Image 1 (cartoon, rainbow, N blue to C red):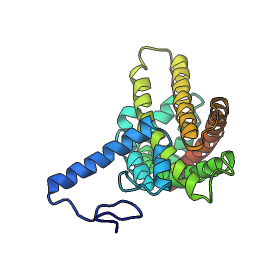
Image 2 (image 1 turned 45 degrees about the vertical axis):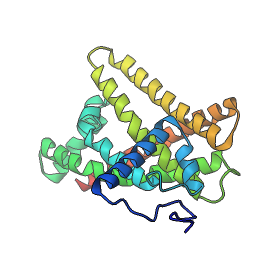
Image 3 (image 1 turned 120 degrees about the horizontal axis):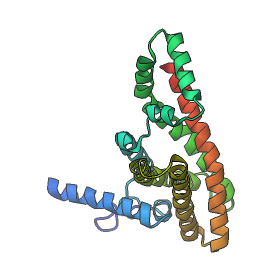
Length: 248
């Protein structure tokens, strides 16, 4: 202790005396975390690695909670298997569902309900393993020499994925709301440009804050990470769908 505070992490040794004080403290912690995550890219990683952990939500807790909230709003964002089937112009998903339903001896509607119930849990598991491991490796490679060990890139990957799943529902909801106003092709282009722009912008600012690299270098790295990450995310998504179909 250093006075009433922990010398290592700064936690107060005197707890809040009332439930209201505790609630206010947790609300301030949540507000600070979300503000830093969205408007100060890289700050949460910087604070966590330097030992400032009490003022902010821990990275893995933040990641899991944001993903949970993302799925709570899946009706609005249309991140559901039924929506994937409707938007699949090739018809491969619909054919796969029909084959699996026939093999399981149930109707397509019943099989789709089974898939829908299992998809969120399996997707979260794949996200927490495949995508998280992939981005950790990506950040380790793209910023080699900048991290000591794997703790840095792992923490940064958690914060990046938390940002993606916090902000992208708003983008998906906007795209869904504009479905009747714009042609589907233009809607997809707008969604892609918006997604890439958000990801590249966040990674660029985080790179500048954490490592102080020049703007051109930071932007190029951000584009490269997003491009490789697109492959990682699609592989993770297809793995989640495959596992879900086989378990339904």
